[in-house]
Length: 340
Image (cartoon, rainbow, N blue to C red; front, side, top):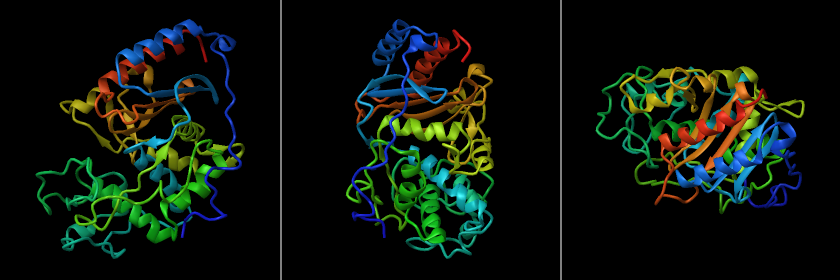
């Protein structure tokens, strides 16, 4: 079991500070970033930001060291962890949840048991059983009404069961795997693996499959984004198969043009949101982890940039999607003022 022991210190002893660089050193203006910061603060509920370009931090705002809940960005982290185990055959994406013996309170319908692990990762299971965690969009959908693999519906039951499958097949909790396979080799600076902080949560009266919330600082979020930008390679060591990262960030479920989300996203991959490059050509190839109230890990490979953004504890003033993309647009104009 993953717990508080000598093997798991409260902070990572081998945390590695990121190299920072002043904007002027690489051809930008600190004054431009000061204006950008003021705009972001005035137009959103931002509490902290980190901009890393070419593997170096060039701008920060707020307390970048303070861990807080990253909401649904947790799902994108789980997708990263899956990569190693799909590659070595430990997890078979084509196996059904019925074959894995997955069930839930009150049981599952025979048609629901046909959902595959791939369906869970792409939120296309067709299982509309109540979830232990809030935030999904399955209310009003009748169970058994949609065959598995045919329709994308943002479904926390899928995401939570993907966590159950991970533990069942690997023999590791999500938190143990994150600590050993990401936090340690990445040298996260602020991550605390204590079970009192990182533990499965949710309403167990609704579902057996609980959520796996993470509490990370914005600079540790940025480092996870940088791993994605580098296709899973960190300091010469392959932490995640590159083809898995490509697969996770490739469009699976296109959004209808009438869907309000299509203003920002072309659709959903495997627990990653794919930016709509037709409406945002400056963000071609970009993708993001996304959490409620305004938590983002935006990766823009074209500009060698990771933009980590938090609206921590800001339910009263969340950063809405349009606000974030307006802020992001301002940032892109600064970065496009010179060739990175």
